[in-house]
Length: 237
Image (cartoon, rainbow, N blue to C red):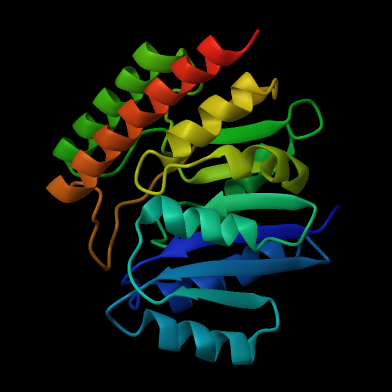
């Protein structure tokens, strides 16, 4: 098995991050002889950064990266992925809403496709958040064509070589990040497979995805991305 970088963003996850790192260690150690845990602390206002530094002292696999100020979900994901050093990248969130052992479902398909992405079956979030997520995926599909049924599901596996090609072209740093990443990967010719994964209710910390400032930034980034692709198409011979 090649080396694995487990990459995740963290914003005000003081109550979750130690448990999340423990979960990753417990699940990945039997599966990978070589792995790292890259956590991008996105300017957290609680003790997330301090907890991460303590975890790094305790576990050689933990590699924290800190943003001095909050930059947004996509910015944190971009930082984490860009600091990955292993052949395979597994991207997830730090809120403990997934069963990490279900990475086996992704690994089972990795030899036949370029990227394996999960979809939450079912999604265990408040009703409005689920509704917003459905509408967002439908809008992205309308504007760019089909990429995945659950675009923002934070349970994805792909080779670092894919990220090194596609990642530098992704400009969204808010909630549009995952949509742009998938669209650009598909346009680059990469084959994407989907698998169902379990989703758990959040038991600690607070979600930020339903805030109006996060939503409005996502729509601005999405429209900017759509215009950019039109311009790129017009400029190509």
